[in-house]
Amino acid sequence: MNKLLIIMFFIISIPLQSQLCKDYLIFDGSEPVLNYGIDTTGNWWAITQPFGNYKRLIVNGERLEEYNQIFAPIFSNDGRKWATFGEYQGTWYLITNDDIFELNATGVGNLGFTQNSKHLVYSYFQANIEHIVLPTKTIEVYGKIGSFFVNNDATKFAFKGLRGRSYVLNINGKETPTFDEIIPIGFWHDDSFIFAAKNGNNWQIYKDNKPITQNYSNIRNPLINQKGTVLAFIATTFSNSNIAVTISDEFAEPLESRQYDLVSYLTLHPEYPIVAFFAKNQNNSYIVVNTAEYSTNANTSPPHFTSDGEDVYFLACDFSCFASISGIRYTLSNSINPQTPVAVKSSSKTIAYITSSSLIMLFLENNRMHSGMMVDKIISPIYNYKTKRYETIGRISNKLYLLTCQPN
Image 1 (cartoon, rainbow, N blue to C red):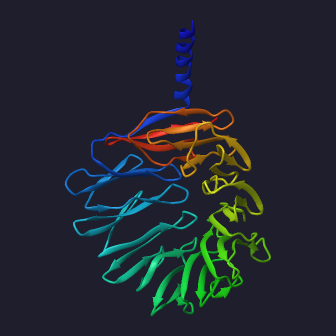
Image 2: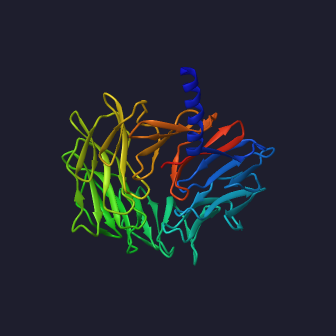
């Protein structure tokens, strides 16, 4: 009788798991796979080697022609567009989701979409001259350092440049005064450009040429949201304390956190002036959300906001491992390394993570686990808000599978 009950339970449990976690073959293995990935909006891609030294890009199942060189695609924030560069027999091409353009180029530079996903901008080289291509104009630049930045309608640009032993910021063709160091950040919603700059021992945040903060001894990890309405960064005071600083039009002046011995893992809410970070004072460790402190320890993950910003979450281990979601602690029956990448659906009380061979979905209230097929290799999971499920890609030999788990 006991054996019968065990067999019946096993049979009943299989449909439950197969209903929640399903796996789909997305590449048949007909060509060797060199690289693959999935972006935060669920687009997947792979680079294969059809023959010789040629490479092929596959995006969401669509196979491109062969190229001698081709790069992983860049996706727009809304996930509807993508673009990349490819080279065939010495000629460079700009390849997009709906067209291919030949470039009169000796090399390629940066490529990306505006924050609102409406415009594609890119750069290419002719000898030592870099050409930045915007929808209505092309700019020739020399001595640019790093990437370039554009506003949402792609009419204004900014980039860092070297002048002797100092640095300048070129904003719409006009250079700022020189600084000892510059960290470009991004365009504000009013099309002014935000950057951090150092003169001597003093760091400040600037909006175009105007400083908008007090002096700090150091500024690091600056973040700006997609709408250009909230800026956050970690600063070191002249008393050698660490603080998180938030700037928004909603505040009359920059909002500074409490002072800590250490601040790290800064993250920014996708829309509102809310920050989260790891902090330490003496032997006490915290995850801080604006002014709220949640006790943790050094063995903790960075805090993250869900894609809609509804929840903030992190993993940690003290006497047991747990997941903290918006301040609620859920003990994990199976220990999960806090540095394991996880995905979280807002308000679902579930998380998804990967082992070395599978995608796991865990219901936090009862520690019930669901998983699909086992694979040889697997990449970090996402929560796809379009399909309303957890997703990742697994590999067996040269076959690729979309692994999915559907939360309640």
